[in-house]
Length: 157
Image 1 (cartoon, rainbow, N blue to C red):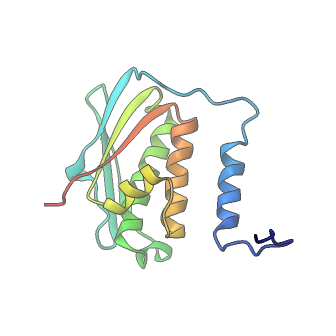
Image 2 (cartoon, rainbow, N blue to C red; image 1 turned 135 degrees about the vertical axis):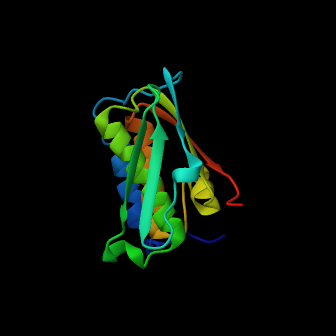
């Protein structure tokens, strides 16, 4: 029989895990969670991309208008992987929609050709720290944004 060590060395990711737990358990009052949405939003796949130096995304709103964002990545992001840029593009789009109130009480279907993003979202983790940070932001949106999120992979072809 072996005895438990008196001290242990933490794994590299341990601080990220503790930060995530702190964020998830930080509210004094449990957040409201949408079970049945009042609106259905669809992320229009053909207009969502983060290839090369640019990005763009759009949301079809219930009133028939399209909310969109587009731009060029800064030097801090342009060298990142395409998986990171594509997921960041989607996360920022959803965050803006939540901040403006246009996604409140909605069910949002996110279509992406990024299998890493879909897998990380449903596993709740990624070996990549940058993807893990984006997944954590999506989980916080799911927790506090009063939206129902679905992340689905579709082939880029």
